[in-house]
Image (cartoon, rainbow, N blue to C red):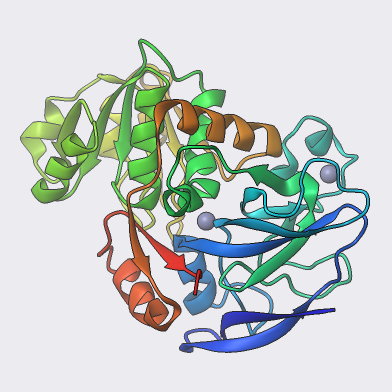
Length: 343
Ligand SMILES: [Zn+2]
Ligand SMILES: [Zn+2]
């Protein structure tokens, strides 16, 4: 067993405190990753404060960048010192249809990076910690030439937005919308542009509309402005909805063209209603997506390396975690906090 230094919440809503815990020894096909940076995802906030995970104390964090500290005897792809990244899945059965088709995130036995059962029935603990031990299959080589701290959020926000774009065929000629400009939204915007789509951002504030344009959006629409929304009627092929709070979907369906798709990747904590006529008129689709499998995570990283894409991040230290959660809860971050664990 390996003693690991972590930052944990002891019960839902509790303050974040240093907490030492043990990780498993490095097995045959395992690597130990020394963690340098960990993104602070909206899911971390929900898990730490919402109490919907199974067990506490809880160490959140599933957007990990670091280096290989140790390798098991059966490890073939990595050696000590390699710069690597880890996302929100760290294990799966390896045999089911989902696993065999590279969609490990939908394996019934998927092992989440934190808050889920590990192979021995203990709760997995996440990346707000000094080290992680996992199967090399779920470890990715860090692309050269990208700021490592800015890569960390790609490991959840990046693949969560990339997967539905690819599966919906977003590319050159696609007129795409992104709702929201938080952690997910600003990465979805960059990936949509890299895939060749024309990308517009829907946001509630004129200030964020300006930063959307600065981040490369072709257009920014203030969604609270009825005239601006009316001008978008039937315009979009695909809209990525990244908003994590309940909101009306009807106005966005009105902006979709025939056969258009609205895909949800944000997770509002209340059930939302859909008027069937919004789907029937124009044969529109409501879809959803979450995380991604190993091959598409690698594909996403390759695309980011090719286009120089990283998340826009604000670096914080562990003593700032409670304040970072407070600010994330009120959407007061441009566009992702990243925890600096290099000290
Ligand atoms: Zn996440
Ligand atoms: Zn499986």
